[in-house]
Amino acid sequence: MRIIAGTARGRRLKAPPGLETRPMMDRAKEAVFSALGDAVSGAVVLDLYAGSGALGLEALSRGAAAATFVEWGRGARAALADNLRHVGLGGEVVAAKVEEYLERPGPAVDLAFVDPPYDLPLPSVEQVLRLLMHRLAMGAVVVVHRRAGSGKPVPPPGLVVEWQRKYGDAEITRLVKEER
Image (cartoon, rainbow, N blue to C red; front, side, top):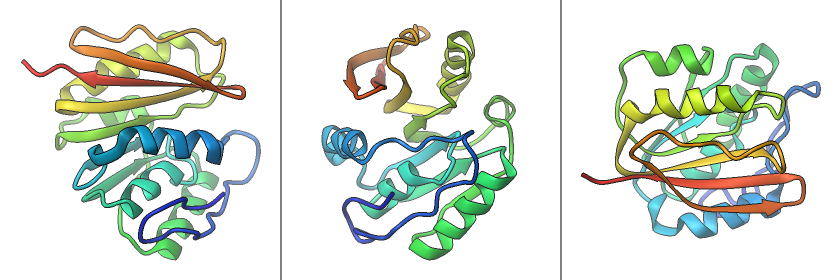
């Protein structure tokens, strides 16, 4: 697992111990960031279920202004903290359950990654999307990573699915907050 592009290109990342986290494949990550294009530069990023931090760190490497990494698992947080130190691009780690974190007030974000464990039930993912809505700036992009065939999340009003794609056993959904 590594940073694919940007100022930290090629830096290796430490994976969390155990089987509870599963990083996005490099091929899928490269496709996601290619599709994001200019949306990353200068963005305020939220990496939910951060695990190793690979998505938020990739965004920072490609010019995101700031990233917050939300992770509850102790082992994953330790690997994440090591990765942030190793890559050296900053970022804030929050030790919290995603739903509890999203219920708190916080800054608006331009780009959010929702990368829960594959066994998280679809209704829970949809609840996270509902809670995330008040944190999204107008035009914000949300990227959801789920196991292919596990059901497509139905977004809350105001969050529109732009596309869904499969990469191996992963399904990536890109959503955008409608500007009003």
